[in-house]
Every structure is written in C-alpha cells, then in structure tokens.
Amino acid sequence: MQNIDDLRGCIDGVDNQILKLLDERMGYVKKIGELKNSSGATIYRPEREKAIISRLESEHSYNLGKKAIEAIFFEIFSVSRNLEKPQVVAFLGPFGTYTHQAAKSRFGAVSTYLPLASIEAVFKELDNKEARYGVVPIENNTEGGVGATFDCLGEYEGIKIVAEIYMDIHHCFVSNEENIKDIDKIYSHPQGYNQCLKFLEDHGLNEIEFIPTKSTALAAKMAAQTPNSAAICSQIAANIFKVPMMFETIEDNLANRTRFFILSDFKNAKTNHDKTSIMAKTDHKPGALVELLQMFRNEGINLTKLESRPIKKKDFKTNFYIDFEGHIDDERVKKVLLMAKKEGHEISWLGSYMNGDER
Image (cartoon, rainbow, N blue to C red; front, side):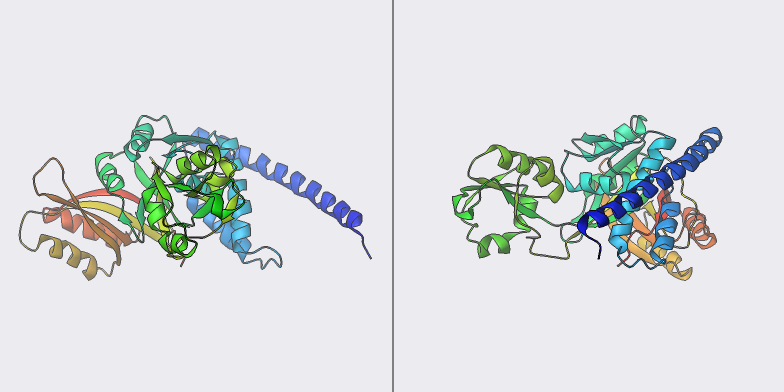
C-alpha cells in the first residue's frame, strides 16, 4: 500500500510532465504569435478557446468537472496570449469589484489590469489604444441594464463587443471580528446591501449602522482597516484585502447574475452560436419600431434583448439597443439590415460574438 510520501512522489512526477508539456505548448504558441504579428491577425480568439474547452470536456475526465477544466485552461490561454503579445485590460474599477473578477476569469493572473473610475473611461482608454481590451457590465438580472454602457456603445464607433461573460454574483459577509456580536457597523455598496436584506434580518444585523461605499471593493478595504466592522463584498475583494469570510453566498436571490462585455476593436469570425448587437434609430413615423422588428421576424431571427435609450442631444428622441441570434455576416442578417436602412432606419453594428449564456 502506498504511503503519503509515495503518493507525493507520484504527484511530483506528474507535475514535471505537466510543466514539460506546457513548455512545449508555449513553444507552438510563440510560433503562432509570430505568424499573427506578421499578418496582423487577432491575438484573442474566444471561439477558438471555447472550441478547445468543449473538446476537452468531451474527454470525460473522472476527477475534473467542467468548471475545473475551464479554470485551468482559461489561465493557460491567458499565459499563451501574453506570450504572443502582452495584454493590457481596462475595466470598471477599483480592484476587487465584480467587473475585476469577470475580467480576471478570462484574462488570468499574468495580464496587466487597469482599473478605471467610470465606464466611459474604459471606452476612452480603448479608443486611445492605451489598452487592448476592456471589460464593462451591461446588465444584471435583478437591477436591469447599465445605461452608461449602452450610451458608450452608441458613441464610440470603433469599439466593438468581442465576447460576453455571464457571471453569478455572490456576496460574502467579511470581518476581522470572530464574534458577530462585536460588529457595530457594516460597509457596502447600497446595491450589494439591498440584495442581502434577508440575511441581515435573519442574523439581527439589519439594525446595525450601515455605511454606504462607492464599491464593494472599497467596503472590504474599510472593513480591513476598521475595528468592530464588517463588509458585504465579493470573494475577490475579501482575498485582496485579506479580510476573513464569516458567511458566503448571502444574497437573497441566489440566481443573481450579471452580464459583462469584453470590448476591443476587431471583428470575430463566424461560429454556429453567435449573437449580434446593434443600435437602431428608427425612422420618425408611426409604427416604425414594429416595422423594424417585423423584418427580423420575417427572416426567422430571434431577438434576445430590446432596450430603449434616450438620445441625450435631441429632445425625446430614442435609440433602440437590440441583441439577436446570428452573425453580422449571416445572409439573413445582412438582408434584414439592408432592408432596414432602405426604409430609413439608422443601424450601427456594435459587434458579433459567441453566445456566452449556457444555461
């Protein structure tokens, strides 16, 4: 029977093999990077990464589930991309926010992250070529759409949606105190606090002083520095500021999810699972929006989101943000958009990307 030392020796041997194979993989990555740089091809290929993960998941690993495979290989992909070309990722900061967590889930630990104070600042950074990628929230299934993202998508024509991330939002209750009775103040962003009211009531914390912060990350930082305090924050923020977690997954709605966009300046190749986003300004006539939507219906194109946004430079005029299934290069899609333009509707293409919602 093998003892612990024997088993650890086996693990060391496997680790050596893993390192050797990863080094071999990176050799191929470097060669691909040289070819991409010479041809001007895109480094980030979400559809290629998805295809690799899908293929590996079909191998029926006995000990590694889907999430484990994704976590391992997204990190490998990140290292690979940075070998081809260093990656700078701008995101709605500060460090420790859920947007930071979403960005890190795709771009890994080795990329360079640039936290910015506003969504528009992310778009400006991309527009000025100071960052290659940007990550911003677009909607939450309990709070609704993020207006600033919709508006910037319509304003910054050179910035395109290249991928989407759906992330479950789990709040943690963190504190340096060991006894919950010693806590006399709670820091949190108001939205995070309001999403955990049942937990607070169940634990007798709803009468304790609530101190609102600009972000849940700042809440974790304040809790780390302030005696007899706690914070409602993300797990990544708790880890960054080294505040122990007293309770995990404390949100009232366990189905709380946020959708994020990855932004850049390139066009994705077609796959069989694409979505496209557009901004449409309909012709100023009765039934114009119905007419536009009917065009999609006639071609059998499924709309997945429709949101109106005011055109702030014109009184009571409206843009419509639309998501639908398909790629901008699909014949049916091209037919609809051409017909829409002929009928006087103004259409702006915001990006075509792989459908990230697997539920």
